[in-house]
Image 1 (tube, rainbow, N blue to C red):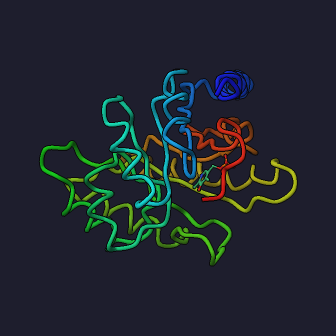
Image 2 (spheres, rainbow, N blue to C red):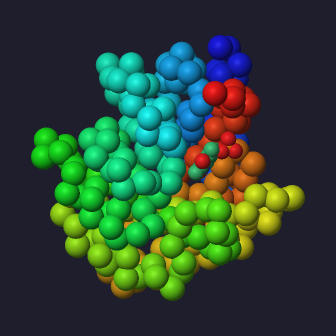
Length: 229
Ligand SMILES: *Cc1c(COP(=O)(O)O)cnc(C)c1O
């Protein structure tokens, strides 16, 4: 697993460099290691290299991993599409959810968040290019959903997430990232406590950080290619 060590060192360096090139003097972004389809041993290696935030996108796959690694202080993020019948498990086992795109799901997560746990951190996913195969709410519905989510006491609204079209040059993502930042700033100006921009993946995290990302979601650049399950 030494390649994971090297990949993490390279990713940390990439994040540092992008951050120092960025005009805004924000904090260093969080590296969210996307461990979907990666085995428990790989997550353990990444943890030993100092990573603490891990992301999964399929509930059934994530639960046994979370259980196997329960002794480690890991912050678990859910980054996949959410079906109603999975909200109870997500509410019980995750610390963050990046992919809220409708009120019904937010309400279920709120109602099902265990009393012993702190409020669940949530981001609203924005579908910026109107891609029907992806989740996310259209910009036009964002404000209303943000207000409704903010009203749920067992959720803590943190900000916005996007997964722009991935084609060609990573620079193609720049306008989407810039727009997402603008939307977050608009929400802040209206009084919403939004401090998070979850944007950027292995291919375009440098561009995302330049545009103000606070959480980059990095899979293959850390773990290598995902095995087929
Ligand atoms: C898989 C995934 C990632 C990570 O993608 P890489 O290209 O492997 O870095 C990031 N975000 C979401 C929502 C994903 O599903």
